[in-house]
Image (tube, rainbow, N blue to C red; front, side, top):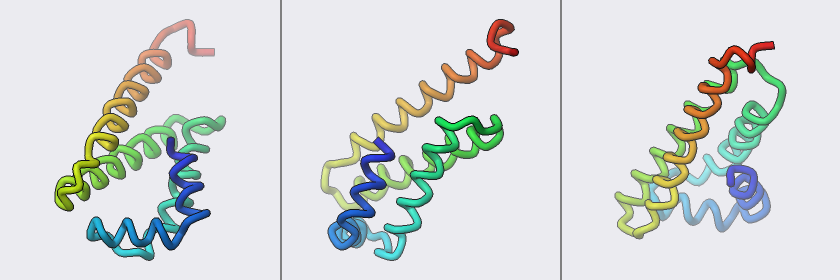
Length: 107
């Protein structure tokens, strides 16, 4: 989901900027946010240290929270997607922490 939205930001920057402005966010955030999303996906999927993975989870959580609040404030009714994404992120963080705390996963 993050890769798809980052690619949308990169390929349709003008449309994404219009959507950002309709939600009350500045348009110049589109490109840095796309780069941050791709970096976060790499941090989660790549062979990186656990601290970096936790920072990526935290960044995505804040991103989803801000997106959800922006949609609620705009009153466009599209806040549910960000809410579901936040719940999926929490479930992923919980399950990855459970695996890392098990003795058979420590190698």
